[in-house]
Image (cartoon, rainbow, N blue to C red; front, side, top):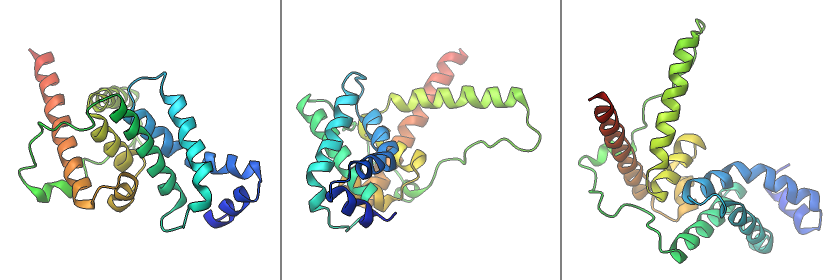
Length: 196
């Protein structure tokens, strides 16, 4: 079913169609809410608020972007409003601009993939490494955590992320570069501290 057909069914009063819309977009909404909002108790209420806003504003959706991108934008703005209301820092303003703007658009290292010669010890090491990296990502400011999740986990393009966050593509690339740089510094600091 296309986005247009799904929206038409929801607007026609088919409640099951709205459930399908939720299922199609819940991964993206969950990523946004979980990466931007630290307090677990607030997350379900915000996710519910997102879908209430989606339902309320669905008639105004003009199909200028994918439906999931539009829902993601509502989720991002809902979380942003929550952070502003709580007066929480979205990004680290003290973080300097990247030294080399050409680096801003590069992807990180490719993910580790098990080959034909599966080794349980290597798989356990990979799992530990993923846990360490995940914990380090959680320590990033909310905006950086969110951009990393959208780009590397949801595999959205810079353009799609820009549509969701209302940030220019260049700014998205710049912030992703800063997030990776900060992540690298924190991981190296932790590694060297643990190594002593």
